Length: 227
Ligand SMILES: Nc1ncnc2c1ncn2[C@@H]1O[C@H](COP(=O)(O)OP(=O)(O)OP(=O)(O)O)[C@@H](O)[C@H]1O
Ligand SMILES: [Mg+2]
Image (cartoon, helix red, strand yellow):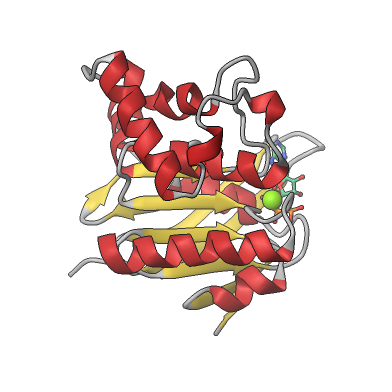
């Protein structure tokens, strides 16, 4: 079977032909299997977040190809890429981009409001997802009334609302302590085992790097070692 995610000699160049040209990703070729957890490690500026943006279809490669399953996605139209991003991919960022005036439930329900699911059904599903993450006491709290760890769980619940096949997480433990980090990682591990989710995570945190099934160390825009 084809790997869930494959990059083939992918480059991402910012500011091409200017004095500020940066090859953020250089000739990156990697394969990520379905139902596995892959961590990208490596120094600041080594291209981890850029690699995540590329495989999450948030940006296009300057050169090279990216495959999700058998489908070559780097050359697809923006309409198709957006559709794939909405249906197949979930994102967890360090800054959760939650809407402060809305409650936890309303934030989590948001991705479903642009589908044909009704608002009340979307909120019911959001409550169930938050409850499964231990947030049943905070469903109607606004974002400004939540702790860092609680925000993290709202962000995770929202990322999972479209039942993605691929979860992309950039520095997911950066604003939470080790205990919450371990809880978060255990939750994600369960989803990988139960639902065949494929996780790709970029991190500096040794706890996250050790938890992954595969560790790819990036340096200067490409993978320079794996374990
Ligand atoms: N939008 C952009 N425009 C120009 N240069 C960029 C852009 N995004 C990233 N870069 C550059 O590309 C390089 C790789 O950045 P990237 O954010 O991928 O690194 P990283 O490994 O995630 O670093 P960190 O560990 O600090 O998060 C950096 O030198 C950065 O300055
Ligand atoms: Mg980064």
